Image (cartoon, rainbow, N blue to C red; front, side, top):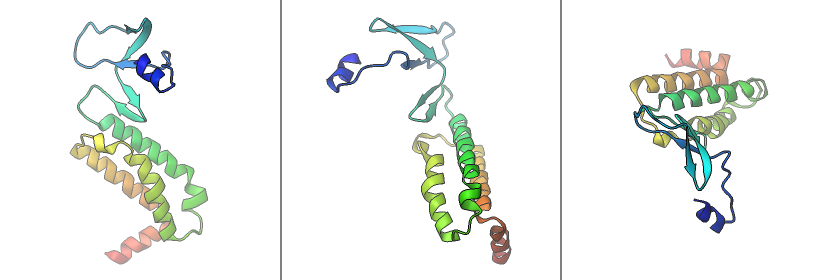
Length: 143
């Protein structure tokens, strides 16, 4: 690993390097040695903001992304969503900025029916925030 990194002009930061424990062994070590360096063994690993867990489900990562997306929506509430910007522009911002936060790494998810419900609920909540009272009026007009 250090040789490959060196060929690219990089160094391995051993304090940040982690190894994920996979499987159900009871005697998992807390550290391993790699090239003379102690490396921590962890249960869950976050790679490029994608949570990698031992379970075969993506629910923890989907819940995490759900929370991050909700926080992003709330941070933009007074500046963007409650402003006089047109609904068309707000939807473009939502699709470009907010959905990209939520969907980052989604191609790796193993989605359950419950995850789909949570994802749909997040989308509906975000759109309600985005549309405000106009959303209620628009929904009533459509029914």
